Length: 236
Image: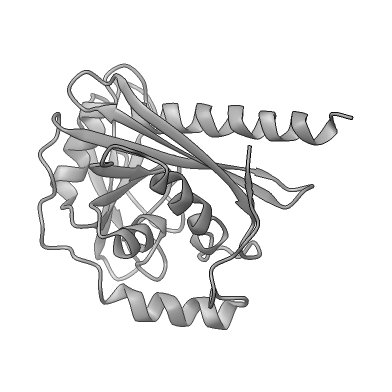
């Protein structure tokens, strides 16, 4: 598998530069569009896996038919980690490789679902927002944990939800129960999609399991691709 060695020209190299980019791009986030209707068209899950020893990141993009949840297309890319590990700035580590995976798709990705955050981010500009602004695509985030925000436990049934709240009481996402009596997931808008629509997309994609099928497929694919890279590295 080809390794993308280049980091984009002008890519931030330190915290101050990355924070400045977030400040510049945050105002470009579109929050007043409902997004594509759930249950139709295409949806694309993106996820990454790391090889810390070799300083590599593997990104996967998996396109699903939103009605049937069948895989339409998939792509991967491998790159050098583009930024050090800093909480709140994780998008800068992986976005170049995620973009490379998306660019390898022949079909339009439709709605993109990240394993991470959008508005539910300390600076209101997580991976889903960053990726949405750079691509112009509707993007949302579905995370396994609530990061720094607070919430009340939603009801026990599938579809029950509660507000994910910032310190000032602003709703930045939802804790959403996707299956009866399971832990909730944490949904936030990224770009060009509303919160109600993002929750509806999540439920439509999580028909059998806690996590959306888009996330499950992308997670499995990037892990398989990472193993291939690691096996190739140790072959004589």
